[in-house]
Length: 258
Image 1: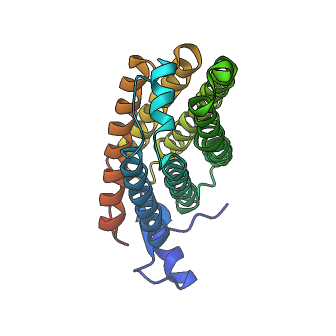
Image 2: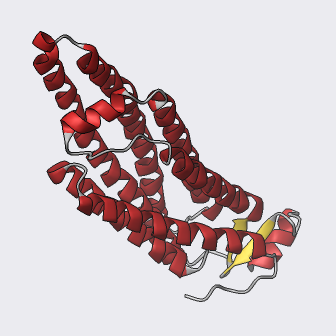
């Protein structure tokens, strides 16, 4: 195999310096990297802001929290908004996969599996929001308005949907966490970006793995809340770092610090 220096390859292919960036001897399409960073920023901010509108209550105290959910007029809209936010985040991760353009055999397979996991995670999130945002809302509304003779049966139906939500959310957290671990590993293995970004992606993925386990075994407990907050902090950290790298990357940029 004949190795051509990155700068010479760019010149021979006729790329403009404003489009291509060199990272550690590899080529990264700068516009694609910036698109990934912007999608991740917009998606994350939108997801968090919409989540602040979510009706809150003691999540594992079903009689109390179901009454809160029944009283929410924007429940379904909030969950649709959360799905949109997650879809934009996943899109940002998929664009990052293409921006890295990893071709080394082992790392390439890790990145491909990360892209597949991202797609599965989005599919599971769509199912989750359909169950939580539509089915659960209809069930708690039916329970709240039911005559006394029917309330027990209506409550049991709502609780069954709640447990189904736990299961789907648990596995969605597993897959989203796996996505971050795989793509973070690809970043760290190839050093096309700062390796620390990959490490932070992996750590945030572990946070989602913990969330998935807690959700599946305890539901919405305090432990899950800490895992969610930890995951948010780590995701915000590596997204900000990625934005800085994407906007500072130039054709003549030097290799990243491991």
